Length: 436
Image (cartoon, rainbow, N blue to C red; front, side, top):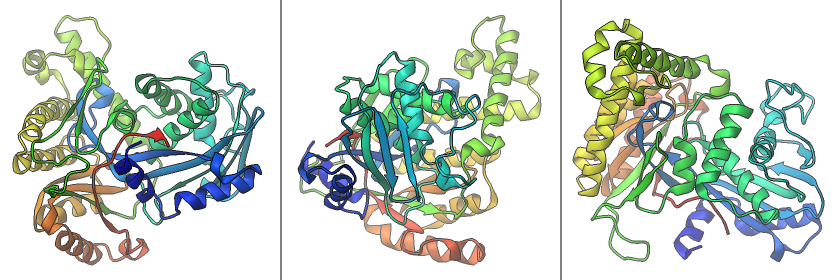
């Protein structure tokens, strides 16, 4: 791992790497020097909102905040995990055959209560499930301690995918498995789609596993092909010149897991219904996803869609076009144009995908008025969490201060519950997930 990536890794949590190593060493009764570290960053999606599950083209990058998992091979089949955020221990064996949550009703009962604390081990079991589904036979468990960036609400940053990937990399490393990033994208999809029942696409996993510092990751979610686009004005890791932008995260205070929010899966279903109607009108037999509908077929037959489905389809096709234009703008270093496209994506998410809620829409509108902001949109599905903005580096502090003050006026009930140090966070781009 490069020195820059190690620096980024340390930023991912205020709990230092050395402290994490000491915790794991005490848990396992081993020397600190043998403890291994997985760094799994959070991600943002500047353009390509809500179209990954339809096989669309998306853009993403990681940030210098995320998940750290310290671990050692357990020496037997047992997995023992503790968390920096949640109480209790998670214990299971890699010999156990894992079943999806809707089949195995015992999953999520690591602690006898119906709280979030008792469910945090589901992603570790999901990682074992995915590896088993891939035909891997694990013999070695892990003893580990996992934590995220302290004080940071990770809603909307795909912390779930970051956690799943962290467990995958640790289990693979402990069992000497050589798994490609592309394979791990599929394994994390299995965790979320099959094991947990969330109907999302592969944007999150792809960003976390494929990103590189300073680059915009472009992913065709239908073909699984990807490439990295580096703007000419963004400096290399060891250069002294200044990066011309910062990433701003503004948090709403709303928290709800997507697996418990019916709005997300309903939108996915509506997109598929729209695709089915359009494909039938075009006389085509194909999987009912919107990427199987050509632009001219959409234009010719979109009048056959009832209003809700028409809005979902309009978002898909317009967002795909914004991604294409945005990649070109990024590659040319045209951040003004790139920002305008991000803001247009945010507006389409509100008007066509209809996934916003009042606090997030207010944050979006505040960010658009903040000094130096190129563009903004929801980060994640838009039902909770945060908004993301690209801002001129020299204006980041001013913009953050304005957003925090204005949001507290509009949401006097929600704002006080936010950690004031992390209510608005200034970030840099990150690197991909890996074992240090």
